[in-house]
Image 1 (cartoon, rainbow, N blue to C red):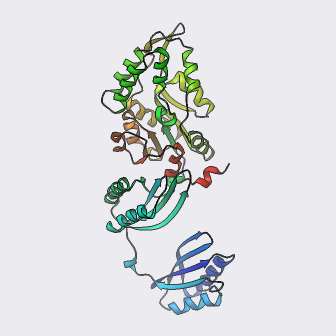
Image 2 (cartoon, rainbow, N blue to C red; image 1 turned 60 degrees about the horizontal axis):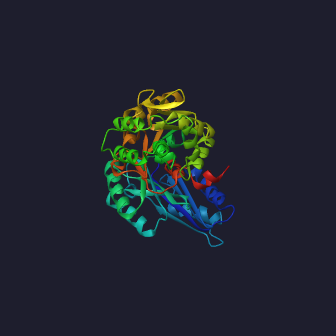
Image 3 (cartoon, rainbow, N blue to C red; image 1 turned 90 degrees about the horizontal axis):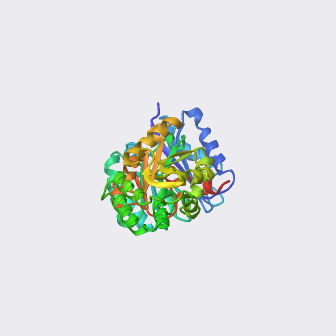
Length: 393
């Protein structure tokens, strides 16, 4: 039976073979009943810190462990090794959370605010991974604490006050399981609002823009606003749809996001209050197979000002996400929803991870995470995907 636990720490300039020497030293203690219970390592610009937690029987003293390290001649070329006892009081009990921090640049002052929040909430950070340094700065922290809900709330307030984007998720293997990532189109995947471009073509842009803004802020019902805006398009020739599609601009990082998701086995989808007639050809080019959007009624090559199918509204977006999840074969906790408007709230709320992308405050209140940077591929960092993985073809 294990009587004591020791933490062995090796630090100094990294060199070939130091890990092998440490584990050979620990292996020599096997016959004395020593067991390896945990290992962690970090190397930054050639500086190494390697830790091993070892459980030992009563007969194995700290001196015997130090002797084993000495015999392996680990302490040379500037590398030092230390052994210290670890007691139960050194451990913060509770489950692990993944805390992702993102900003154009993350300062020590911002990290100070976050780590002070951990301390105030009886939590500790076990691991830090620098996921990206461009075009944004992003760190993923593995945090252990006993009260996750209180910690989430505290971190959200601190992150907002110091200018950090934040996501707090449960840790586990599910992060690398198959995921469905559902995005809104207008002002999320795209920089544009499709109906505003259509309105430009019919000379009613100002009137449509006012209705669009009211719908996105939640001031009026989306379904009613869509009917009003589509009615203003009556008489436009069908050929205008091709002209509008040619003007669409993808959000910066959108192609990178989709390319990376597909390469890593994730399934991208789009659920939009926009129109199939405009979006479907574009998404086919981007290899996105799942789309739910509204349909315009077109007769004799002319837009009638009416819709040809039930409206994809706020509730309809959530239903589409649930249907796509069933078709893809993933549970809802492995779905991600990204949107910016009030009609995305239900979709964001039902997904395993809801992300508000440069969104109105009312949307951010319902999201698990909020992004304020203009790059859509920053969504990948909330999935634990590093910049190095993104840039690997």
